[in-house]
Amino acid sequence: MARTPADLVGAQPDPPFEITFDGRRVTALPGQTVAAALWSAGILAWRTTREGGRPRGAFCGIGQCYDCLATVNGEPNRRACLVPARPGDAITTQEGHGHDRLTV
Image 1: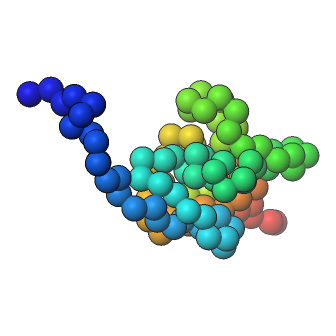
Image 2: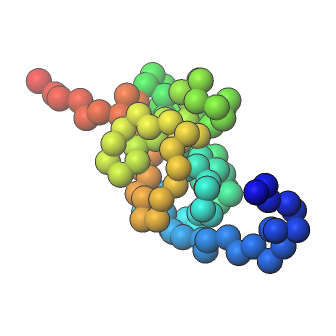
């Protein structure tokens, strides 16, 4: 049986939860991507470019441009516009390519 708008009256969404961005607490809503949660908190950049260190955040919002790469729970190069936010996620600014460089 199909639901009607009347079925949704009084619907209660799951409660907000917290993630962190560079140690700062950020409130996220169920169903939000990491990028949406960061945007909602006024955070517009969470990556720096490989050359020049220029700030980047979401650009296309659909996972095609890779400007929104972030380190999520220690895993670099995650597209923040596609990754669902989960309670307790730790997002950190991704610098350059996201992997530690070895010095010789």
